[in-house]
Length: 461
Image (cartoon, rainbow, N blue to C red; front, top):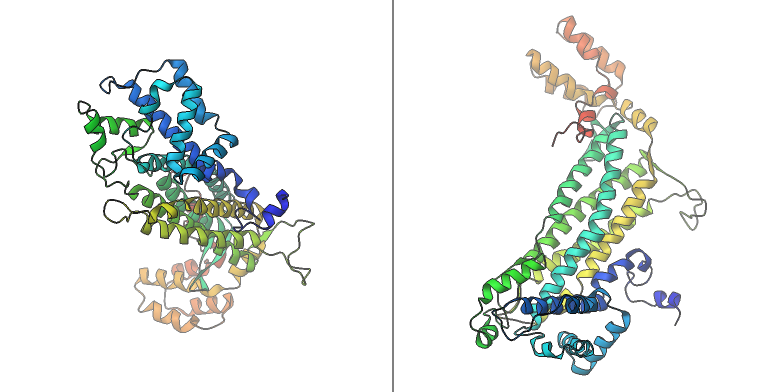
């Protein structure tokens, strides 16, 4: 079967149409990758046992032997994954398959003296939870955070270059106090930065404490070791935070926190995609053209905002999965059930839809330019937005019920600047106040928007 045909008959679009966009995530979430991470945990645990003198029965490794062992996961190949998969088919247990394959490798390295120390005292969940902790942290740090950083940089660029680009605000879809395109992009930049920081700082946890979380097998075999301290030190050696009080299952609370953080971040980006879609629809943003791209199968003029639409759709898929994961994975009946095991295998789907959405959203952001002329024309076409400014200034002077007066003038009415100037001339206020009111313009009524758009250079946060 050709590679092209394989992509055409793939069950998931992540493995078909979009595979080229997310293929690098297979280094973290594929079955082969999970085998590799399990091998890594088993090898590091064996080396850690050998370094602990009180364990006693595990001989120390030379530096060269440690290097040879670590090469088993650092140079893990497709053939290695296939060999473990062969063991899995034979014994119908994927973690035990890793152990049997590793026994073969140790014998090939003439390390038979360590065979029975391999997987010593461990339950499958000890290996699995640590493997997932490692792969999730590295997928986040190596794949998601870099593209989010690039997206942040683009939003900062738009914020600063469009800081003065006056734009009609809309609340409830209706004309409202003007803002600037830069300030509106800055809102998303700041929100995304907070969410990205939160995502980056989720500390993933891990446990190594046996079949029901009591270290029973470890203590029975080697009672003189402080296994609680040993476990904590080993989990920390993997740059994970140790959890000591568990059932057989690591509770996945930190994984739920990661999912919740990613879900919140994706919700912010979904909001961005929808707003950019509307700005394109209103002519505020224009998209660069690709000569060979088709916008519609029947309407030749169309330039559709497909990147933001694709981003929105895939963000929605990711959010749905992440929300399910954060509800499901922390729940396990009594000391252990397997319902979360099959669910956990799908966590890469949420990362895949997220990464795909980030790529499309970033592509959309890189294709847009601001139509400043259209922005200003629309603002100037709605002088009624000055009603807020006028009634607020009149409040300052003590003018009676200015809100009601401006409401009568403007609400539901199509008025012009001439109407506003005539209204101001008839006000019972002094000439200085009239001059202040007559100086107001829709395009100038933007308050601190330019400064807010440049929040980074002004160190506002």
